[in-house]
Each structure stands twice: as C-alpha cells, then as structure tokens.
Length: 334
Image: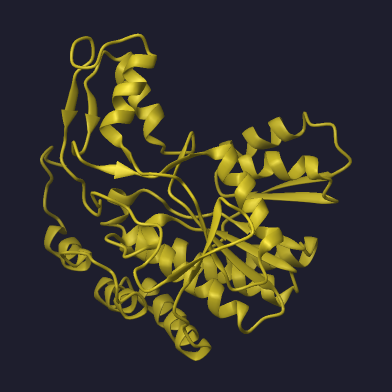
C-alpha cells in the first residue's frame, strides 16, 4: 500500500494494484481514489498463483514496471506450511517474472528480505529462491530484474509494534522471544522510497541491500513502546520471554559471507554480488517444484530448496517435522 501511495503522485499514466485480499484491496482503493491525480487507477482482485488470471491482467494492461511484493511472510507459521510457502513465494514469483518477460516489461522490482540470507527458515529460503529467479531471468531477458533486500518494516502487516501496543492495552505482559534477540528496523515510508530509488539505479540483475543502520534489541524496542504508552516497564507492564519460535534466528544478516558488498551512488543502498544459477537448472527446479506441490511431496520440496539454497541453516528438516507431527495434537489438544 505504501508503494502505491508513493508511486501515484509521481505522475504515472496508470497504476494497477493487484491483491488477493478483498478487504485490503478495497481499503487501498478507497484511499487512493482520494488523491487528485491524472493517473488512471485500476484495482484488481487476483492471485499470483493463478496463471490464467495473471496472463489476462498482463495482456490487458501491458505494464511497464512491476513491483513484486506478494509473499507469505510469517516465519513460524510457514515452518509447517512448506507446500504453501513454495506455491506462493517460489512458483508465484516465477509466474509474475515469466509474464513480465513475456510482455516486455521494462523493469521488474522484487521486494526481498534479510531472512533470505543464510536462511534458517522456510520463509527465508523461499524468498532466496525468488531472488535467484529474478537474477536468472535478468540474464535471459530484455526486462531489467532488480531485487531489494531489507529487514523489518515498522508499521507493515505483521509488524511487532502493533502487537506490543495491543498487549499493553490489555495490561500486559509484553512478550519478547529472547532478551538478546536483535532485528533491523526501518520505517515503511523510507523503505518504499529506497525501493523506488533502486528502480532508477539498477541496470538489471542486482540485489540491492538497504542500509538499515545498526540492529536493535527487540527488548529495548518493547521497553520504549511501553514508555511511550505512559507506563513503566517491569512495574506497570511486565515483559515475558517466550523463547525463539520455529525458524527464528537470534540475529538476522543483510548479506551472505560470500557476497561481495559494494557501495553505490546512494549512501543508504549497497550492492550484493550473489552467485549465479544457470537457466536450465532453474527451469528444471521450477518444474520439479510444481510437481511436488501438486503431489504434496514435502520431502521433495525440502530437497529442492536445499539444492538451490545450500547455505540454508535449519537444524531440523521441517519436512520431517511436518511428517512426525502429522495428526499429533498440540498442547491445546487441537
């Protein structure tokens, strides 16, 4: 939504907004219609996993620039939803990239995450594969494929700050997974400004890493939110440590140790030079991903991910965890 807010005033001929959430699409449509611009606005309800629907939209609108921000992002939830993570984050990204190439889009900008670096979870690994898709397409297409990678965005869907506020309103406790856990944070408006900046800077094939400053202790952030609410941490509102959830890392990274990080013309944007994947390897992997998704073959999905993302650092195969836990009740007896 914030990307749309910043793109519309620039003076584009038309803005096409695609979302699978009916309410979210309605909400941003109502907001954007209040802007007095000469741009045409089209809001489309659809799904990046629906190839026929995507084909129709690309054939109808012929967009020049595509901003691909669609992904499942909830780390612990996706640990036991491997098939859905692959279907949406990998195959969905392939669908959008393929059609951007087919319909001669000038630019394709993918929004990635710091969790794609040495991924310790399914969400990060599937986003790393999406990065590979963009890089590989760029080498085989006239479309410029650009990736932007950054950490947590304050105020975005699923952000920790609204959760803290909700817990404070209920009188606490505020939950933090670990006293030492850190995360990179950036405001949503700044992140979107830098995403737009990379569109201008990129020649194609780059992974731009946004400079997010120093990582912040989530405990410190929780304490500050409590104080800003007029309360005293540890007295009015207690803080409890719940332990790291499935797939969570204590500290996130913005680039892999083998990526040569270079400066760019923008002080807040760096360039990560990642390893390349050849076209045939990628095409065969996507075909196998689709077959595994269609047959619910969790073990094969896990093997394919590790083949494309060998730096994945999971301690335990989530495929094995999913199989072991199949049909087992959780602590609530569900």
